[in-house]
Image (cartoon, rainbow, N blue to C red; front, side, top):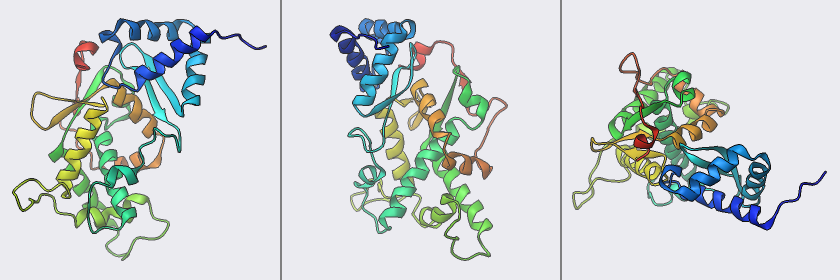
Length: 264
């Protein structure tokens, strides 16, 4: 049986999807956005229309709630997909292009692992992770050390080795810090690349700058995105190395009292 959908319903669904493409805008800041999120929760037919509109635009709906709004992820080969080739293009280094892409990818996986180091952290909506450049860089370098020890007697990594083992050498030989001729921080150092990754995530509304310079806290939107990432192998491989620091009984996380305050 075919359900009739009005033009007005399609327009409203499209508006909700467009709201999701403005990741720093949240429902508690916009009454129209908040009403559409509420309608999505209460009206199954409208929710199906939103899913269809999103699919037609090349994106997939991960979640819709009043805290994060509508969270979208691009489908493969969508016009909205940001490929690692594009992300890494601005960084000019002597590394092979395939390794350069993976180094950037490993940094992003490390940020996710540090933000939510335990399954319970990732599953609990009331927790927020904190990350900073130094912490991420140190963790990836420790992962490199563990992988170096693991492969010390094997020479070059096997063709079928986990992806992390195939790229640890490329990250390890990259300088941790460096300066350009005019004294600026070199964006090609690992800390420069990490700082760029954190700024990029903040620009997408996935992280929020903390009071302490260089430190960021995760948003609920990022938590939803990391849950999607956790379905892949890269995050599991990094966590399995046992190099993710948990600095207190409550981990690197803090309890959030007011979701709206956290998402500022």
